[in-house]
Length: 67
Picture 1 (tube, one colour):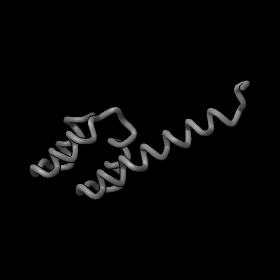
Picture 2 (picture 1 turned 45 degrees about the vertical axis):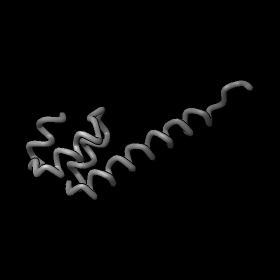
Picture 3 (picture 1 turned 90 degrees about the vertical axis):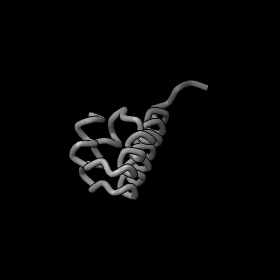
Picture 4 (picture 1 turned 180 degrees about the vertical axis):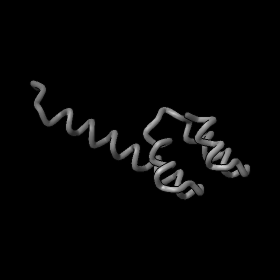
């Protein structure tokens, strides 16, 4: 099957969905929307971020550590 212009859109949609899921997970763990969005869109380890938040890491420090 020949590539179509729709294929990159599907990848972008999947990527957007992953970032959205990561953002929601970070918000549930206690981050504000803006900070959660920045971390979610990065290559930061999501599980490490949640673990640090659960252990009481301040959101400002978490962002400095991960980004």
